[in-house]
Image (cartoon, rainbow, N blue to C red; front, side):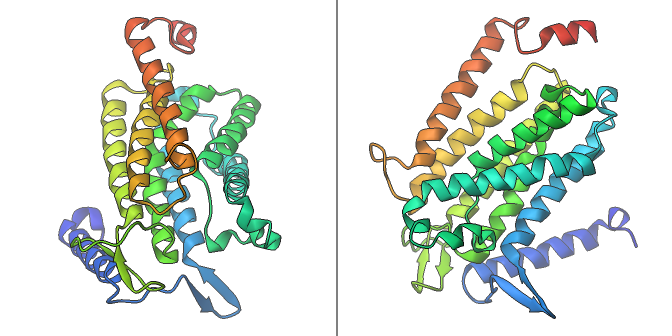
Length: 287
């Protein structure tokens, strides 16, 4: 049977998974960060990250078919160019931020499965890889990024489940109904990872609706919208995280988020008052 023709089965599966997640959130069910399968030690953090990447890649591949100018884009090849530098830069960024920890245990900088990937580093590495790949196949970098940024929130939503299983993104103690049980402290805390997932779900809904109405304008607006919205979400989420406040009472992520919002919102205002001067508008005029 196909789930597409049996929506009740799909809803039943979603309902069961939701109940399972809620029980794990409250500590009723224990989900280990890794399981041994024969000689392999499968880390759920890595599985969550890869699931997010492949889900987003699948959607990009599906919707790129609507844009003939992206025909040369091969998703499997693109993943090789984008994911590897994305993960490398994400790890490097994280290790630099927490250098005080890794200077004491330098080999642990290689233990990605223990958690610790920065979304900001992933942006840098991923975009750098996308630049060289799109240049190689002569495809518009901007349009490729616009389509990718529509679905990046999906990757973030799935990836945050890895943080939950590693129990590394939580905030202060709380008695709220949706609190997260932390095994190490045996307390119920704010599930910061869940707050970000909700925020990313809202971002995806906004970006996807805009994309459905307007397609790819090749003006960078979708990217600016993402930067603005995610900057807001991340700033708020970090209020509920136990990360160190290192700059004027703010986390490093909050400081970066401020610049993301200022840059993204500033460019959106520029587009509003100068609609014909956005990035690559000349390209649109020729196509």
